[in-house]
Length: 381
Image 1: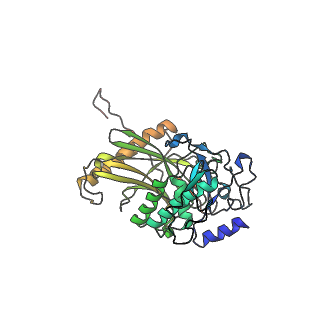
Image 2: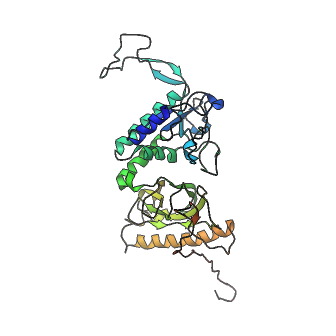
């Protein structure tokens, strides 16, 4: 009953964050409210009294996932908790627990109410996530509860190994999609607002994530994973600062049909020396047949200043940008040769709208990359 009420609240536009429960690893399917399919279920971590996130561990009392199966053949809504946040040894407001003379009425000044001792529980972790949600809504009043949840999931710091990699390479039964990252979540919400990507423009079935960034000189090589939860993914593309110019990435060779939830790799490169001076955003997204976007994945880089703006089609920077893309094709040929058979073409994996399988579109030709070496002995090439 409780979980269904919270689902209805979410569908009505209310963003719900709810505690996972305090039954530890032996819990039987999370709490009634924490089992809500559409809410943001929050587990608790122990930060060990350090500011380093790397040593944070799941709190011993935090209820673990997955939730009980509701029989709807959707494995994603059983993936609870969604995210985790610090919930151990939290200083709390006194709230007139020990005295009756403080202001506890609406509009009253509670600044002198004092604080009480430390407390622990997923109910201490949940308000931290609620505060982040409030900031996200303040910078972007258009995003709906499910987009807010997707932002929190996608920007969270990954913790623990994937518990169900056949369905999602990031979700962990203890930490969910990870330790919530307040800065990145709020920034992503603001960036969607700045670039005009609205809730109606998004398809959250599409999953596109930067997984690794390697740097050689001024060239960044981005590799990532993409998959779909059922919708057809037409292409994956990236942009600098979310401009009007989007460039399609290179794809891993796909042999045969891929099932729904099965991930494939993508790659692209950016020469930061050819970007405007100062901070630049590298944005990557998936797009369906109707042009709807996945949640964005992004990186910040400092540009070298050899181009004033990416929008000028005749500028030197634009020419260098095209050269960068050409360089990416060559690099990707080497990358695929290492990971795949050299005689396999590069092809775009697309999810079938009917079957959910990923296929190559009938009207698309496979992409091929061939390396040509110069023969320095006789001068031929």
